[in-house]
Image 1: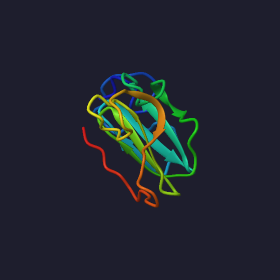
Image 2 (image 1 turned 90 degrees about the vertical axis):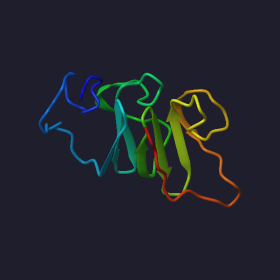
Image 3 (image 1 turned 180 degrees about the horizontal axis):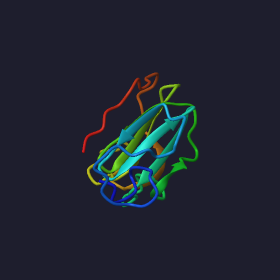
Image 4 (image 1 turned 45 degrees about the vertical axis):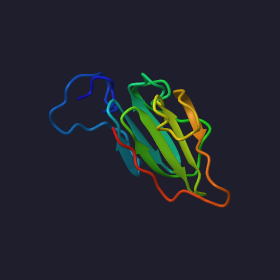
Length: 130
């Protein structure tokens, strides 16, 4: 599906076959239900649906996520986004109606929000479900 531009291809609409996006340099991609994240040289890009803030502003072209750099890994949940920095910090944004972002409340976030950790602890990775 590509109903929200989550394939980073101009326009929307079903694409049953592999499609070249003409985007280059991404080292990792993670797909959520209606959005996707892409990693390029420690920077995170997002595209697709933004119903809950998970894609920042949405659209079918990759948009640089501001305020976070030096990112090591990316994880797209159903309607949420998570990234881990090279220093072990976890940031989350998007749908949070059940507290799935782990930021201490139940409010959707439209910007990357630090996830609290116990003193001296760091994140090595994350996982995100639908």
